[in-house]
Image 1 (cartoon, rainbow, N blue to C red):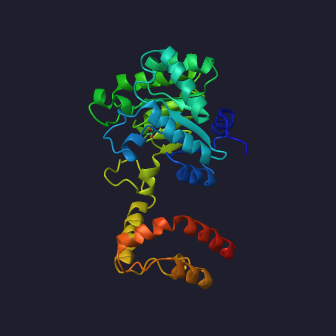
Image 2 (cartoon, rainbow, N blue to C red):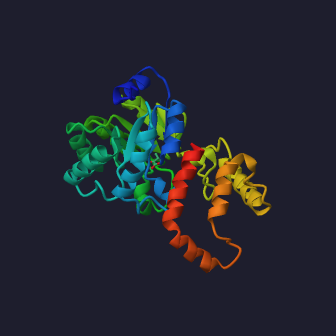
Image 3 (cartoon, rainbow, N blue to C red):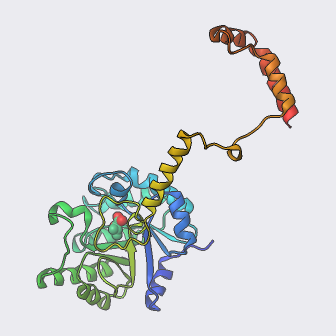
Length: 312
Ligand code: KIV
C-alpha cells in the first residue's frame, strides 16, 4: 500500500484540496482513521491528557510516544504518520533533537515528526530536514509551553504577537518544515499566514482558511468528556454509547443473561462421560479430591490427549 508522502500532502495544498488530519494513539483507532482515508494521522502528545490522564502534555516521555506510535504505524495503512516530539526531547539543542528524532523514526517506522515553536525551533527544523527527517512545525498555542502562556489561551491577538507568528511561520518554511500547525489563533491571522507561506497550514482552532484541519480524535468522538475545547466539534457521543454498553454488560452478568448459549462452548457427550468416570466426586472432600487428582495426574494427562483425539 502506497503511503502518503510529504509530496502528496504538498500537492493537496497546491491543488486546493483541504487536508484532514486526526490524532490516533493506538492500533484500532489508526485502522479506523486509515479506513476513513484520512491522509495524515498525528500521534499527538495530547495522548498524555486523553489517554494517560495527565493534566498537560508536559509529563509525556519519548518512550510513551514510541510505545503508542508503534501501534499506530501498524494500523495506519496509507495514512502518513507524524509523531510529536515530546517536551524535553528537542529544546536543549538540535543535536539532542536529531538523536531523539532518529530514535523515534527508527523504532516506530513513522513518516515524520512534529516540533513546537517558531523562530526558537527553526535551527532544529533545519538540521533535521537536512538529515532527511521531514518535520511539521507547530505555532500559536503550543501546549508544551502552556505554563508560560498561563493557560490554554488564544494567541496572536495583538498586532505585535500577530506579526511575530507570521514571521515564525515564514522562518519554519525557510528552515524546511513541510507543513505547520496553527493552533488557537484568530481566523484573520491564520488566513494571512496561509496566504504568505507556500507549505500547508493545518489549523486547530484557527478557522476555515487553513490548508487543512487537525482535531483530537477523542474530542470529535465525544470519548473524553472531562473537557470540551471550544474549537472541537463533537461529531458523536461515543463516550455515551460506551457507557450505556458497559452498564448493559454489568446488568447481564448480574442477572445471568450473559453468557448465553450463543457465547458458550459445549463438549462431546462421550468425552464428558469419560471425564466424569475418571474424576473423583468433587462434592465430597475437596482437598482429598486435589490429592487424588495429583496422584492421578499422569493418567489424567493421558486421558486428556485421548479426549482431544475424540474431539478432533
Ligand atoms: O498533540 C496533539 O494532539 C497536537 C494537536 C493538538 C495539534 O499537537
